[in-house]
Length: 168
Image 1 (cartoon, helix red, strand yellow):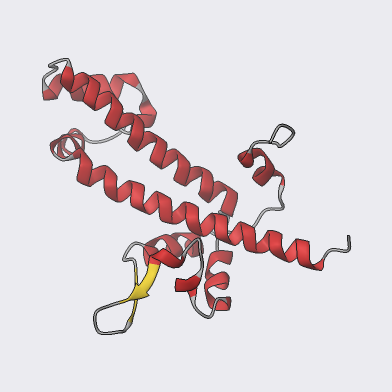
Image 2 (tube, helix red, strand yellow):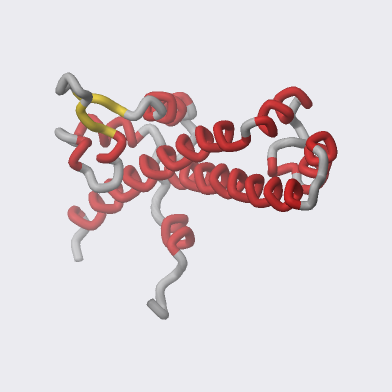
């Protein structure tokens, strides 16, 4: 739409929502598996018992432990993590296609951008990543997506509260 502000700009203007609100949201949702945003993270196992994506508890624990964390900041952190993984994948693909040896590739990655995550890492961690970048970054991306989904859902819940209780 022509007059709309970009989504992140609109979200940044909303009142801050503590990331820990995602925990309260889960307590208020009688069946989180039916929620259109976070529902796919919940389900039922082959025995009919409730199941949850194994990364969800770790993300929610981070939300709970980092009391200063807002949902907007968690959303930005998640987007940043996905962006860094995408850029790393693209850079590695191009450098490998050019025939650059692995050790030179690590040096180039570290020199290209500190946000790619290699400048501050120990060399053995970077080599481990280079041996299997898909597995290393796939887990990061999954955590980031879960972080973004919970942050967005908690922000939306807070906004819904404003819309339904404010006089128009």
